[in-house]
Length: 346
Ligand code: MRU
Image 1 (cartoon, rainbow, N blue to C red):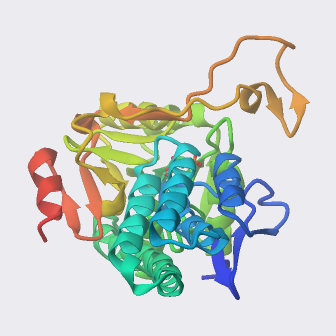
Image 2 (cartoon, rainbow, N blue to C red; image 1 turned 135 degrees about the vertical axis):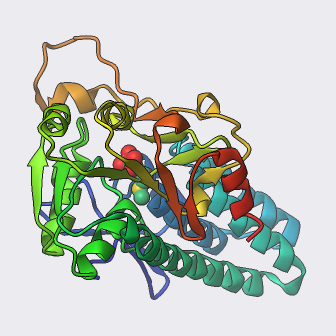
């Protein structure tokens, strides 16, 4: 990997500031869980798996910050930290998943003494980070079989190394296909309004020498009509039990366009993104972000002052438009309800 999305180094947590990419590769240091929460909220780090891993390290910092003397006071403190980290962004379930996993480790080790609890939390966060990279590589290995030599692929948002602890989910599948020697070309949706496609995905693909072309979001349909796209693949922020997928706003349009043009539309996500508690997409909370992300670009107004705007960060793609969901435990096809549930007993 030619960059690190995040790193725990000598008791400090560093995040590559994704707001500054592609112009500057700058790392910010978080020394408190509150700073991690703000970094997630402000999109210093973004992408469902990446914010989950970052939250796990936020919990490590919360444990380090704690001045509690009793195990119960310690637990109370880190539970509070967990609640505040979860609130940073509501759609990606990985955040909740990672915080709950960290709390379970704290609870399990509580009577071994606080120094040992802190150590076990540090180890667990490192494990979550390593497991995420392994899961991505496995998704890549499995998913690349769906890509043929000579394919042109469309992707939306950024589901690459930057959106994970490393390697990427949807972009990991693309990378694996390229590494397997397949000659592919990637069309990158710029992904308004935050421009994850143009700023991050194009940057990653170029770093990995994978041929790509940047397009604006509204060009995808025309390219499909011209027969220029063989397959589309995206990541996910939360997958409901029935296979409905919440992902970056605009994903639904891509999926519908693929359906209309009979182009396979795939989702790649680790099982930490699957939320069996949400029965269907309608139950997934959709984050509403500040409208300044739409009305301004780098602080400069690009719409009439005071205009009303709407900025939902995600949308839901109904499962019927998804050809398959690629996970580290296997490729799931319809009926998703059964297939997704079965992943958890493997
Ligand atoms: O708002 P973002 O940039 O966090 O949204 C990211 C996405 O929607 C990604 O596609 C998703 O998190 C999957 S990343 C592997």
